[in-house]
Length: 314
Image 1 (cartoon, rainbow, N blue to C red):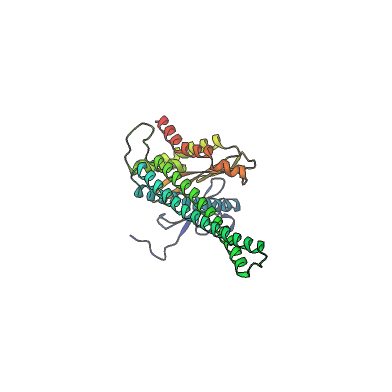
Image 2 (image 1 turned 60 degrees about the vertical axis):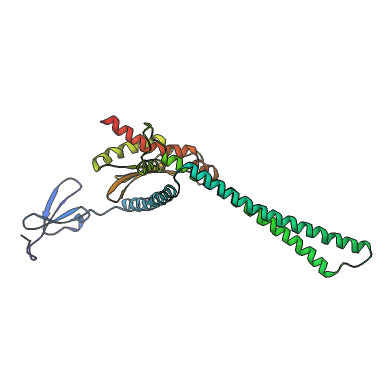
């Protein structure tokens, strides 16, 4: 039976000393506490969380910002992986595509080199003509001088185009080889030597690569969160900064070789996930550290570490 609209409401709250209060009015000095709105039959009608401190508000903002960035990373990597797995069937297919692409770029380079060589020969003829005129005591016509200048300009432009083409070739080859390595990682058998089972294995490998642990249920996630905190402490070189129910973050890196790890509890499609992030100092050495093999190995070890630790607890 629904409560009458005019039914008198009561409030229940607990202060910082654990004292429980019931009243139809909340004193101004008590509004900071979490409170429940009760009907005359003591049914909870509404719950108002306690007011957050400035520090808690700032921490929540940091968590929200971190979540957004981490969710972007996860979404982008997942999208790239799906394209990769749907485009190619095997490493052999990828190598064949790479060879075809390189052959096409090499053919384009030969065209550019041929154009440069043709203009260089043209320039030699123009310069020879000018030299013959000078030796004969004749004045070099303005048009011939203009043609020589134009040929030199075309050669310079051709060399710049050739350099850009060579750089594009190097970039294309590097990115393609990175895709091949990624494809191999996504489709490799797991550590137990079980055969590749397609997308599920690829998804598992991708999560490991990102430093992402997907919880089976809230109870498992609670245990995994404690293990994740141990992992962060073991692999960070900086002190503790934030530790809450949804974010554990070490202090910002101060030295070039510092590693500052953080984990955040995310919810995606009604599934709880623990995401690992690694920060390094904003310097050339720090950036290289964060993009290098050491940071990558830490990310890849995160989810398996939680899985093995959970298994050991059973």
